[in-house]
Length: 158
Image (cartoon, rainbow, N blue to C red; front, top):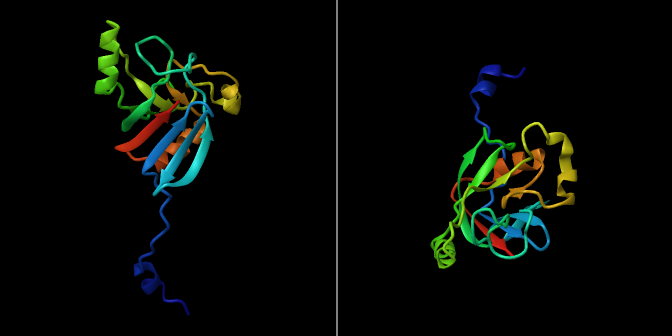
């Protein structure tokens, strides 16, 4: 007979979900990859800013930045289904914007679809539609949310 007292006092270690230590976005290919020790754990198709070619230089240009940044905080109650903030602008982004007498902007995120529009699913990727953010489906955002801790480096490539 199974000794339930002994069974209930045993501890079990469940396998952890894979955790990413780096995020790489390839704007040209419209992909976001979660990596751990250089190995791709998961890859997602994305939508970008409405004007995706080239580096972001100023607020309102609808470009997604390019460079190396950090994912520094998350918002479960954003206007979009969950969002993870990208620590933009960097010092070089500020310097470049200042050369043009412009504000570099900010509030660049990885996020799901606008609240109430989750039904769009993958169809949102048919065109670039954000103000400079990186958009995925709501279910993909759930995966990214679980796999990417705050403080993770994100590299956004042309």
